[in-house]
Length: 365
Picture 1 (cartoon, rainbow, N blue to C red):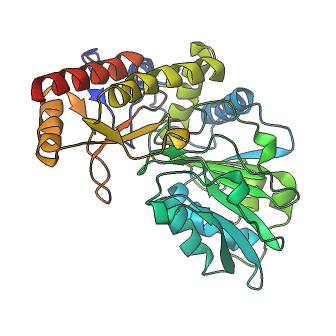
Picture 2: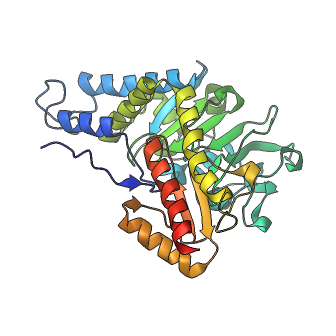
């Protein structure tokens, strides 16, 4: 039995689309991984066979993202949500402040968790505008006594994305890049730490990638639980306890697929092309469709929009579902529509949605 090539138009926000080639390779290797007579899910995480999988995934990530040598790459669990707690637990003392830039629901949650360990302060927020935009760099006021600065690079719910990042000087900059990691080139050296759940651009759910500068790692608080120390995982090559072995295998295969596509330059160009198809359908609709995010803050990953008439919006979502489009309903907290065009979503899928939107408008005006 082989996986059918008839695929849904998958716009799920996460877990999200995976490359068909990766799924087919995983299918072929599922029962017998490289002659071991075992599935990769059955391998001991201490075995040479899995160690090779693990280290190759790290090496591919380093190469694709051009990660400097003074950074560690960790594969953790618990999603970005656990990082909301681990970061202040490791790097924020009770009498210290940390600057948070609020651009959506996930940065709000990160701020809330930090308040359990120290004093988070708002460096900027677009909440009063219902998170329609990323704050201007000139409006960001970083407390000079901050232990670190935290931001969320892409906001899945509201469809906004940072185009340029603040220069925080000697204050470590930490970014949650769960929904746009490896979607474009980024200078990793501008950040003290980058973290991301894998389930949008990197692979299936279950793996959390952490890229952390060694000097930040060395400055961490020590009087915290062993499993919640970054140093525990750094010293053990992320193998202190049993890792999500299948998730790491899949992550490595997705990274290899990205290499085969031509690397981040090609991926970025493709993501721009995909988003343009859908944004053009919105912008050329004379108000039939309208976006949530301001134009200068629009995300390439999560395209959020409404249909001007509420009843037509319900009809649009129903007919889109019948036509094979999956995951177009907006987040329950804001409603509307959302197309998540992550790396593995094909150009053809985004073109098909654009054409569907144009036809739906023509049929319903």
